[in-house]
Amino acid sequence: MKALITGGGGFLGSHLTEAWLACGGQAIVLDDFSTGRETNLASCRRNARLEVVRGSALDAPLVARLVKEAEIVFHFAAAVGVRLVIREPTRTLETNFCGAQTVLDACARLGRKVLLASTSEVYGKGTGAAFAEDSDLILGTPTIGRWGYACSKAMAEFYAFAQAKRGGLRFVVARYFNVVGARQTADYGMVLPRFVRQALDGTPLTVFGNGSQTRSFTHVADAVEATLRLASTPAAEGTIVNVGNPEPLSVLDLAKRVIRLADSASAIAHVDPRASYDQDFADMPSRAPDISRLEKLTGFRPRRTVDAAIRDLLAEAREKTGENSAAEREG
Image (cartoon, rainbow, N blue to C red):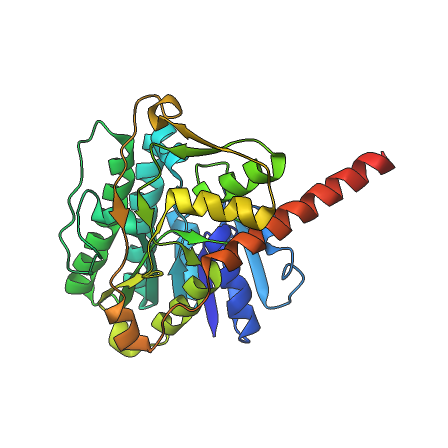
């Protein structure tokens, strides 16, 4: 089966591309590589069943052509990361909603099933031990850029349901919770790769506030496995499904784990996040998923640990450091 994977050069998209090819499928990756990296696809770049197209999900004629060539679509192209969405709000809204609209329109018109990648951010300021898919979405004021990101992803979900009612779009929405692992970059505000970089540099790990805020850190391999199962489960069509590790972990405890696993002498520095984000910042005390729907539909439950993801990032960072050192010696 041939899949179109938008954003396939990104962190999660590249892992999905690898897995799809490993299952024997063909893949078309559409990515403008504005935040994704071609090196993310290095392990499969020479695979004859992979086609990489440099372009945007906002390019309607291009999207239509590629959707027509595919049998299923995974829409992962998005503006992500707190730093990016706060500093580039217009780009965030255009990419996340208008890009999704372009892809969903093409899928509806051409009769292609689509898995729409969404985010736990849509739960916004909601509270509770765990969020279920039918929990209310409580977003903050438009003056805070983070809520623009959440709103753009929520609007894409609304649009999928609207297209399904109007034209029979076949879709499933996957709401991902803090996916982590190799290839994730700290450039756009992701916490774990930032901690890893700081620990290896021997600099303090910067924890926002007191670090008591909890998150559901999900190993990327678990996220990919859940994605593939959802895509192949007919009963999942027309639904929203949480994808995440149901075991919450505080950001402070995450920092301590990174220091321990890196065998680092780094300290922990508690900082005011508003100093890094020009006062335009909002945070939530907790966010963890209820994954009973995922389990019921697919039989899948995440089994990989946060420590495994930390080790993967540490190994990757150390390998890059070694490569850079070797290049400097040769130069």
